[in-house]
Structure formats: structure tokens, C-alpha cells
Image (cartoon, rainbow, N blue to C red; front, side, top):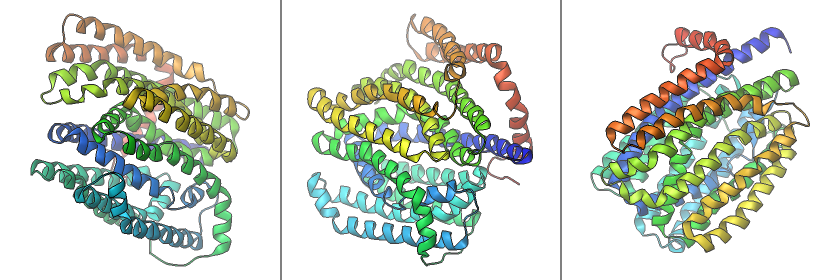
Length: 491
């Protein structure tokens, strides 16, 4: 691999992570404030319905492109116009058929879950939003292949802002479940228009079987992984929605959302960048090993302290915030999901790396294992312990992270302990003064004081212990900011 190409990829990785992390930070702020408002206005039952119906849409989305989008991103050569048109056409045929069938059978779905007409309307609204989202695939792929994540974040931010603004306004006006429905449609329209303004692509219809055959050789095994993830997660949510009350599904959804907030803030950004980046590095194992190790380090650097802060402060905030006590039953699931989420953060880069070097069958084995464990443990533990069952199962399954670690070491050596040890120590230093201050009493003053002190302690200890790891990235980060002070305008 040529030296200038390596430098270009490194620069785009840092720029991509910067753009996506900036995007995610903004999205998390919007999401945090909006969810906080909505959880005060709306009941756990409404959240439970939205959680289950959203899982149905996720279920359908996994069948939407049979892995062709991933094939276009992973392939070494630039995709041809013929390949892009073929992928777009096949995807729209699949998505259109799924949406039409789902709308036709939506009354049956409503009967199965005892939903009224409002719940059925929500399902149909999410189906429309799903169809609009499918039209964005090709423009998004073209940006992602170029690692132009600073452009890719723009529609995502606008979508989230419009969704939550519409939902909150309608919820305040008393529209209940309709708030989520109209918010979803508004999100779909805004996202579609924005992506075509940013990344224009001339719509065309046509299928070239030769092009599809080549793409499917990688796409089908990749999509099988996605299908198993679907069965493991979203289909399980649909199953739980049938055997548990919607209020308890609301508790599970609330716990998962907040426990996975650090992952959404940091991990998603790194993972989104690393798959196309690792794919470009697949011919240089030494460089790839270093990149994976750095991914582990930065995941640890951000996820350990943010998860620790969430675990410490979630319970005091429930008791201090008016009308928030109704979420107290979700605390135990939150703690269990938080632990599982931290370990999941470290399996994801490994799975990405295995996919990037073409070991798709290895990741397929992992997904089969995780799916089987989920469908064995979750139903059994749910019958035994009610809505605590799913988080207990997630907690137990998270320990299998050791398996992908052994898998990747057959191909690439990764110094995992070296990458994560210093962030763990710094997080422990941060936790001690926070718990000490809170032990004298919990109120807004003690929470604010302990939080500020904890952040200072973590920052100082991180600088003292990890200066050598962080300093090389500051010039690239500053260059990104100075060259691009507006993260949504890359020019």
C-alpha cells in the first residue's frame, strides 16, 4: 500500500471520527433533552408500543438490500454505474414488496398485539418512513466509500431534530402515540430531500445479473449476519412485546436507551468509520493491527467514564426529577444492560475487522452463537423473572466477548489489555471522589459538584497517564477543526 494512500486514509479516519462524534454529540444532546421531555409527558405504555412497533420496522429493514450496500462499501474498486443501478432497483423491489405486504396485514398485527387503530396508524407511518429511508441508500454509499462522513452527518442531524421537534410539539398538544407517527414521517421526508441535495445521484431502474452475482458473493453472508442480529434483537423484542405488558416493554426500552447512550455517542462513530477504513487496509496487517488497537483505546477512553457516570447518577436523577419516579422499575435492567453494553463495544471493532479482511464466515459463526444463546436464555429467564429476564440474559451473553478476541488473533495480533488498562485506571480515579461527595447527601448541589470534580480528576489522570497516546492525534484533530470549523461544511 502506497505511503500517501495510508496517510490519506489515516487523515480521513480522524476526520470521519471527528465528524461523526460531533454529529453524535449533537444528536445525543437533542435526544437526551427530547427523551427527557417525552418521558415526562407520555406513559411507559406508549413508549412500550413505540419500542415494539419500531422493532417490527427494524425486522423488515434487514431484508431490504440482501447485503448489497455492504458489498459496495467493502469492494476495493469503485462501483460502476451499472452496479449502483442494479443495487438500487433490487432494493426498491424488495422494500416496496415488504411495505405493501406489511400495510395490507397491519390489522392482523394489531389484533395479535391488541393494538387499537392508533397503534396500527403508527405502524403504517413507520412503514412509510422506512420506504423513504431506503431511497437514500445509494447517495449514502457513495459518501461512505469516500469516507466523507462530514457530509453524511448533515441529513442525520436534520432528521433527528425534525423527528423530536415534531414529536414533542404533538405530544404537548395531546396527540399521544400519533406524535411518534407524524414525527417519523417528517423525519423520512427531511432526510430524503437532504441526502439528494448533498450527494446527487440520478435515479435509474435496471438490473444487471452479472453485477449482482459478484456483489452477492460477499453480500449474502454479510446479510446473513444481519439477519441473525435481527432474530437476536428485534425479533426478540417483538416476541417479548407479546408476552409482557407494554408498560414493562417501556421499562426495557428505557433501560436499553440510556445504557447504550455511551455506545451511540462514541462506538457508532468509530464503528461507522472503521469498516470502510479497515477494508481499505486489508492488505497491510501491521497497519490494520495498529488501527484496531487504537479503536480499542479510544473506545475505552470515552466509554468507561461515561458509563460509570451514568451508573452513578441515574438513580439520584430519577428521585430528583419531577414525574420521573415512574421509571424506577427500570433501574435494575439499566445496570445490567450497561455492563453488557461496555463489553459489546469491544466485540464490534473485532467483528468489523474480520468482515474487512473477508472472514465473513467467522462472524457468521459468532452471530449464530449469540442468536442461539439469546433465544435460549431470554425466554427462559423472562418466564422466571419477568421483564428482568432479558437484561439478565444480555449480562450473561456479554461475557462471550472473549470468543471474537481469540478469533481475530489467528490473523492479527491486538494488544487488548495494553489498549484498555489506562482508561480503566483513570475511570477508577474519577469514581472515588464522586462517591465520596455523594456519600454526604444527594441533592442538585452535590450532584453538580461531584460531576465537575470527577471530570477534572479523569482529565488530569488521563493526561498524566495517556499523554503519549493522545498527543499524536491532537495535530490531526486541530487541523480538522481549523480547516473545518463548521463540521457540517467540509469546504
